[in-house]
Image 1 (tube, rainbow, N blue to C red):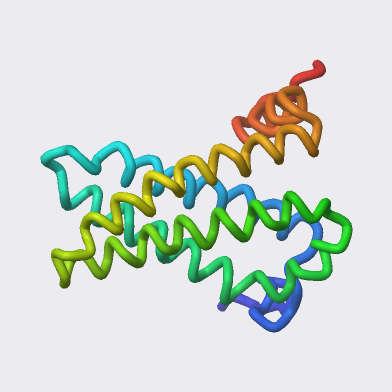
Image 2: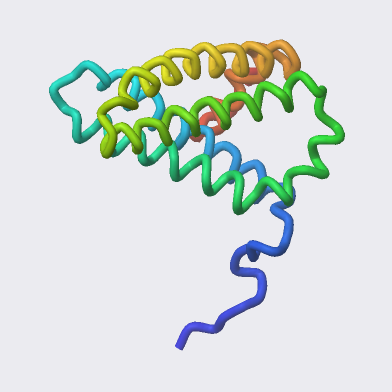
Length: 158
């Protein structure tokens, strides 16, 4: 029989801290960016089902981030530059709005133009957020080290 411990996983009420927070944020960014990229790249494709699925995955990522982790991450925002926080809010708002208008466009065909416009604008907001993150948090060397760690490598400086 398996013994249950209280250290299994952080609860929704407990703040996500340290290693768990970093792991969550990396996984969330991969999920949200990957889903947005698939949705964006399949917009004009014959594979509408993939576009739709990826859009709902973006919407789910935004909802999970807002409901499950935003309250626990707010104290951490005090140590971040306001520009970075605003671009993060803009990304989640823009990508969330693109996903929500896409879901509405399934039911109301008149929403398609609004959905396309919001998705195009969201792409540029995402690019802006990435540029701010690179400028504020060490640029390419830090990103290369992060990607290397993610892939199981020894790091960029080794």
